[in-house]
Picture 1 (cartoon, rainbow, N blue to C red):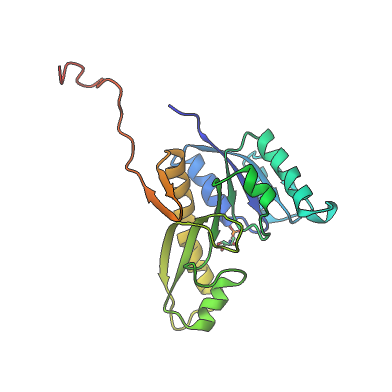
Picture 2: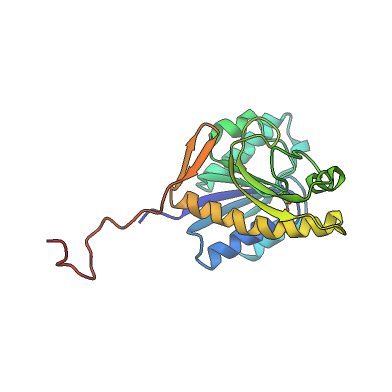
Length: 220
Ligand code: GRF
């Protein structure tokens, strides 16, 4: 059996998606290890959530670096030291530059609270309410150099209700986020994602190719 998937999570805030991932690991629904959590913001709840579970959690202040490239080089050093294979952006409120993208090509995920390509960028739930859409949702995608523009892996939809506020819609979408992010990481840990340009498909789960231990004589 392969080693558990090594994940590094970049955060900036509450960390409810990080919690969903850590819960899935703890319940053994996801065969992975969160090797490190890095925040660009100081004192955020996401860092506490990581530390409570014994996960290394670090605040790195972007203002302390000359450039975004220097900042990301420091992040890459920490990710590599933690033997991270996949980088998971979970409420990370910073644009990822070419430095990090080229260190983890095709191996950076983001979750966005809209059905992309609708409503990229900040305050997606507010944009959806203002526009008057009747269906909202969330998207997990691979990160590329654009703003919320990488290939889509999975989307989940929720209804927009007549009396919705930004908060009520955000909470309804978050419930879906917490389901799909660990689910996709599980697929990645099982090497089931098939990426062909923008088209991402899911391979069926691998079947055991070893000997049939229940009925060893069968098939002879
Ligand atoms: C989520 O809505 C996510 O889609 C967006 O930022 C929010 C992060 O929430 N990228 P949390 O920090 O995981 O609670």
